[in-house]
Image 1 (tube, rainbow, N blue to C red):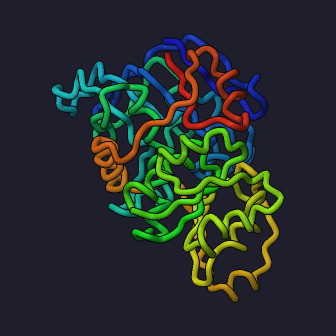
Image 2 (tube, rainbow, N blue to C red):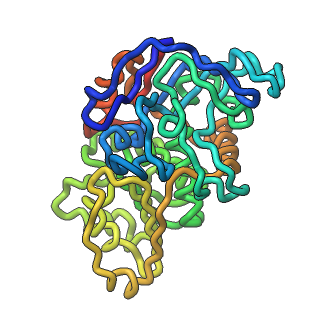
Length: 344
């Protein structure tokens, strides 16, 4: 099969198109013919060494082992099954839950042995992948591409909104609202949990689209009076912030939070380190959450919401598999709206 491997830490020249044998499923696994793999920040940061370049460079203490096929947002068709798997699964069109874990229900994402497809396992930048049968779920939509945009970004966003315990009528600020996680934060907070969403983007060209997705107001971080813009749009301080930007908007996010507000971060595309005056936290009684991925029950809840049309796919652009380098470069451009897809 054709696959794209990360052969070491560095720039996109560390992505190599190779021909390798199709993997064989173990007794509890299935072989999936990949139809679509969406791109996430995680595989780019893994390649760049943002998580580290030795031990603890991935999700497990021992670090990433190269070469590794990245990619975790995967849809496809099951074409064969291991000896312990129900043969009726062959032919099913599935979306893959993106990690394994021995954690008990509700704590799978924080178990010490949590292992991510595309990091600890070979992933979706390929024509085939093997994966545990019980982590393959029926696609929520008929289209492979539309179903592929949700698994990692959607699960991450769903868990973020769950963590802040969003309630109808609350005002939530969403940073990076044009990205994969951010655009889903907008939809989930507004259309599933009933919150009033203020979306933060760079370019206001996508304002109307974001309002269609559920945002009540859209503001630009390029404004010289961003704090005032947010407070005016929200009608005062916001109840919670869902952040994927990090340093670039951190101070502003805390400034616009009400006393007793909640701040949840899952990603830091605008800077992974920041300065924090602890007085801001304790004088405003702010609760902070670190968040990544989520639980299997949340994944299933999300699939139901997608099937019901409460969350819709947003796709920016599609690339063929052998243009993975170009796709990852494009992913890092500003001004996109939605997910970038690789098509084997």
